[in-house]
Image (cartoon, rainbow, N blue to C red; front, side, top):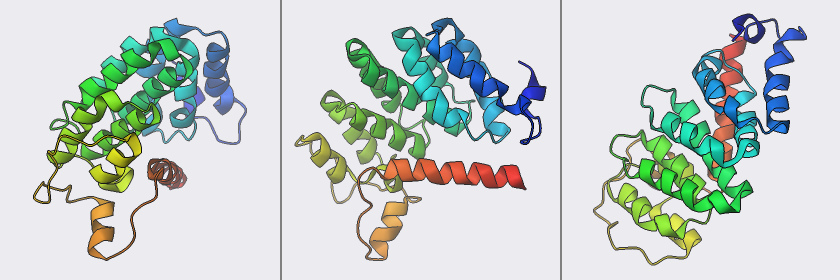
Length: 221
C-alpha cells in the first residue's frame, strides 16, 4: 500500500487513485483482492477517508460469495475499528442481496456475530440487526430478540424490538419484557424520556450519514 496516495492533498489527482483502483477491481470481480482491501480498512478510517465506507460494500458485492469468509473474519475482529466492522457487516449484507444463492450463508454469518452480542458494542449489534432486516432474515428473529432482551442494542440506530418484530412480521419468543434492560446510551431511549415520537424506519441510514459528516469534520480540523 502506498500511504502517500491516501495522505495526498485533497486537491491533487493522486488522492483519487485508490478509489479508482478498488472500483476497477470491482469491475474485474477480483475476489482475491478482498483480504488486501480489508487489510487497509482500519488505516483508511483513521485517515478520515470519506469514500471507502460507502464504496467497499458494493465492491465486495461484486466480488461475490468468495468474499464472505474474509469479511466474516474481519467482522469478528474486536481489534478492528467499530466503523470498519460495521462496514464489513454491510458488505456481507450487500453480497446476500446481490447473490441470492449466498443469502443463507450471509444470514448465518451475521446471526453468529449477533449471537456474541454481549461482546459486541451495542451500536455494532444494532447495525447487524439493520443488515438482517435488509435481508428480511426472519430466521434470525430469535438471535435479534435475545440481543434486545440483554439490553445490548442501540435502539437509536434500529428502533425497539417491537419495531423490528413488526417489520419482520414475527410474534417473538416473549424474551423482551417491560423489565428488560435497555441500552443506556440509546438515542431512542432519550427521545422516549422526552416524550418524543419514535425514530422512523431506516434510521440506520441517517446514522451512517451522520458518521460520514463527523469523519469529514475530523479531516478538516
